Image (cartoon, rainbow, N blue to C red):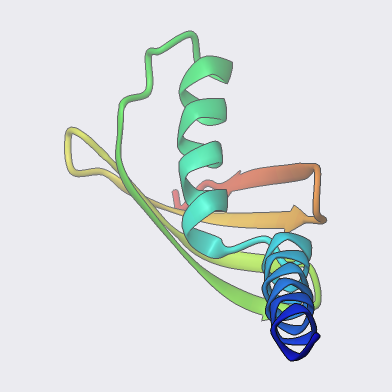
Length: 92
């Protein structure tokens, strides 16, 4: 009986952790998804070396996008658990 209670407690704890981490979009995951989306949106003309995002407020992220030819651009992203929109901010 005690073993069953321990197993249920562990299962609930693991389920809670999985739920909490899946509800909050990580910036690493978002960076990977953005890289794929931006390259696809540009018909693979824009090759991205890296994207670094910082959570600004709520569901807003800001960051730096660096292309494979070492051009850096600012990026603004709004994301919820399933969708995101982005804007590359022209620095010229």
